[in-house]
Amino acid sequence: MGLNEVTIGISPPRFAIEPARSHVHPAWLSRTGTLGEMLEPDDAVADG
Image (cartoon, rainbow, N blue to C red; front, side):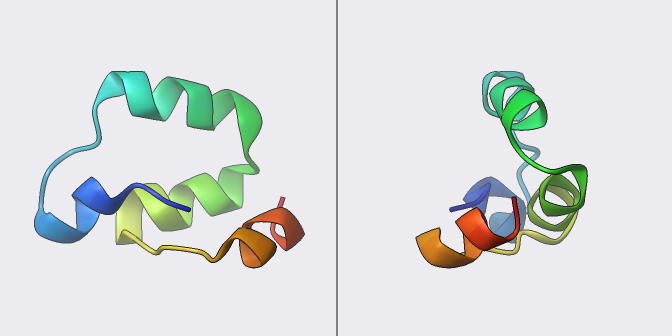
């Protein structure tokens, strides 16, 4: 789970960020949106 565009240097599109912003914990969004961190499904659930 994550925004894999970040890892290759592309800004995530708005249509990907907006649903993520409303459904996931802000810390998780920061890690995936800024650092490109990908989480396994169990880790994503545990991290909110």
